[in-house]
Image (cartoon, rainbow, N blue to C red; front, side):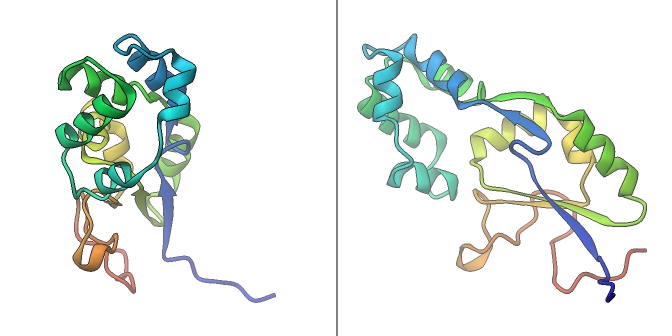
Length: 165
């Protein structure tokens, strides 16, 4: 049997180390809309504005302006941000504990498809996540050509990986 050398472990954040529940976002936004929650769910789309926001090409306020017009929301940016961030639940301790156990043997990196509004929230509210990884890459902070190699924190992620010191 051939063995494969492992240089690093890669982890997604949403649903792996942090609980995610989109239903909570819709519940929050329904309180500030003329639409019922089912109508909001039907109208919400991962459309061009969503994609631009996830890639960091438009700001949170620009995306929220789009949501106001498509979902008939009346809330200000602060309230929409609170609703947008209500997607997050608790840290998944089992996963984070496992990552902590292997960090002395492997570099651990986080990759996530998320936006700057969410990133600011979970970095502030869930500092253990940041401490669990050597570095990370997020879609809202792309490097040249939109590639996800620019680190949010820690040193830039380079391939091939250097030897662990």
